[in-house]
Length: 494
Image (cartoon, rainbow, N blue to C red; front, side, top):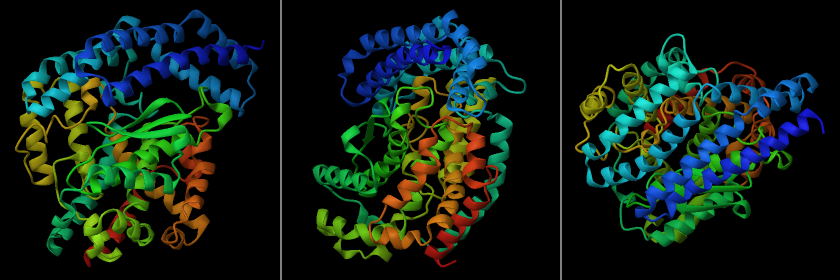
């Protein structure tokens, strides 16, 4: 057996363990009884340690070195070696005991966070958050960095990203977004109260499944359930799990479903022969978020999409028959500073991410203490969005990420919003009148273009290389700023 073949075989064992971890994590948020958190924490901690030890074994090190000599430059084998070499480099720097403890505390942290959020009790969550922050700092020190500890953490989610690169990204969009929000505010308020009401959950669920299927999510290798915080997960690219949540605001579950379906279709688009291999799945979180934002915002909030989908909405919810496509899309794209990130409008969304980015950096470098987090959070919302949360449940307790010790993740959400427009501009150039296609319910050409250009590339290229290959230029905010400015100036008549 060649070294490449032996390397892939060893990774298959690791992938099986990681699949079990993912399924248990999904189950925790969807079906697991709340009293089972202790056992689940122990089980997940053990699995994380086992996969870590297997990944960092002498055998893995030896096979990567031997495979690197066999692989022809530019081939899939060479990409496999590159991906595994980077992962091995990161993992060998972190002790297995730290991996196990962070996994155990993260599992417990989720249950404590969910209870704290439900009860609006930050004090209940603060102790374990402090422990997770300390473990994350240890992780950052193990990984190493030059300028800021945040560099080591965020590179795990977006290869090559640093605090400085995120600062540069936010500097490029902050002023245009703030100016656009101000111009929209001057145009006057939009009354979307008609979208709030007692919408039957069963009808919402059926409609959400319908739109996910319509845009191309494959329910033969996927499913959708409910969770406190919507997410996309699952054990493999052929077993993808979406979740949404149902509220009294009708678009909440609809847009959440389109968002998570974007993630899901990216995973499902992996070449079948790569399933379970190091090249399977999305290449980075920024790229992943670009696809969820594409299907949620560029497709799902468009006039063309609702030209086709509105009759089905009327059928499912007769009270919406008062809306035509023009009026419904105006309500759906209402821009107004709000508290909940996952339900924020497209324009103010990145301001929510800026808040979290600045807080994470402060927590990691020690300039912000956990006990001061709620006050710091509220002041940032006052500064960036002009509003102050009345409770921590809609403030610093709203996101699930910190309960698992996931720091360095949030900036990729803003990157995804920016990249979605950069990529979709190229899609439009290739496909022609995309709006005419969507208005007729023809979403397959969009999905097939994305599959060919992005999804089927998996992790073969680095994130930056893939941006260059797909768009012909480096990642930048120009298309995003031009796109949302034109869209919302037209909607608001400014």
